[in-house]
Length: 184
Ligand SMILES: [Fe+2]
Image 1 (cartoon, rainbow, N blue to C red):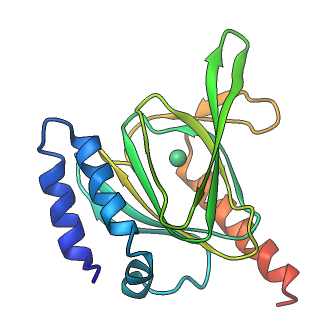
Image 2 (cartoon, rainbow, N blue to C red; image 1 turned 90 degrees about the horizontal axis):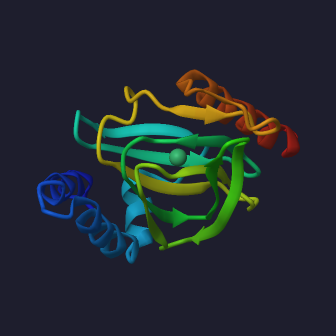
């Protein structure tokens, strides 16, 4: 059975290991193999958004619910991340910096029970291609909310300082669009 307090305590132990991201990745793989337990513990998602489960200077754990059809603009984190999916699907498009801006450099679709580790320099955009809410646990090796980092305009790929309120608006707009499609 998934226990949130136990998961966070295990993350806190893992980040003290010599390869913290790998240790968290292994923990995430074990955790997501019981994805139904994770969902029943965190609650079946009813709307998109981000819930903070743990926040400290060296560890952030968030529950991310992606509304159907949502795409978040390219951004980086400036810290390692481990992502695990307990419901739905999260499509990741990866980018690399070029003298002209950004180039698309890869793609990875994450299905239920999948997990992935992202290095501190990774730049990605995330999309929920499915018609259901996607539930993901994201673990970051730092304070995800206070780190200064970048986002890129999805059309022009122009780099700007990351704006958390912009991200929150993207979740709200995607929720509204999804509800409108349902006729609510
Ligand atoms: Fe991200």
